[in-house]
Amino acid sequence: MTAQIDRLLAIMARLRDPSGGCPWDIEQSFASIAPYTIEEAYEVAEAIETGDISALRDELGDLLLQVVFHSRIAEEQNFFAFNDVVKSVSDKMIRRHPHVFGEMSVANSSEQLTAWENIKAAERAAAEENKTASALDGVALSLPAASRAAKLQARAARVGFDWPNTLPVLAKITEELTELKTEIDAGSDQDRIKDEMGDLLFACINLARKLKIDPEGALRRCNRKFERRFHYIERKLAASGLTPKEAGLDAMDALWTEAKTAKLDQGGDGPCG
Image 1: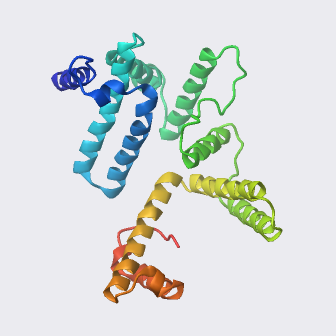
Image 2: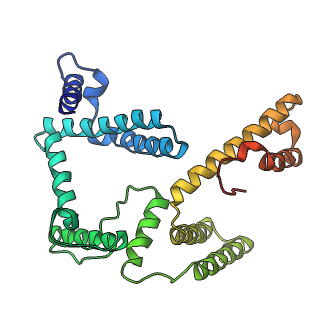
């Protein structure tokens, strides 16, 4: 394994070599490759959700390459190197698992999660001695909005700011939907409507969290279902010599209903429209 890691590090060093390396790789910076890092993480998640183990292997390699790429740029600027990244995360894993590497004991995964968050809170407090600590500290601004909302809600829940079950969350969703409809009916400006739309989405994400459902994963799953059903509509119309615009909404809606009962939706996907 060490030999393969060394090989990958050598490949990246060669790609970044100003004398004879790859012009594109040489031009890159932390900022320019950050979007690719995020994209690769999503592709890992996609491979997991579709159960494609071969793709998972490849996508994990692509994600590892991103770590190596960032580390190489950092090493060139004398910030840190790949080995420092490995040491940092190894030290962190040992520090955050005292029930495995130390004397602490935990009864179950719930207690372990609480201990993990307590350790992280202590680490943040130590790193920000001059700042007022918050339960929400450390939730990255760069996260997708749905994932960040779920994390913010989970952080608040750990200090008691949470409903006891899903019933009041469902009531909140109904309340937010009513408020959104009121603003739309009143012809309110876009900012007011956007605020109410955000409140409704935030409440829906809260429900997903209470149901232990990852909102990003649920929405990706729904996206794939929408694609399957819409492709079904397109195929059916094409067989009749029609385009979607020529067919009209009523015909497409009938085919949509047909797609919902067709075998293409079998395989565990929940409802999405």
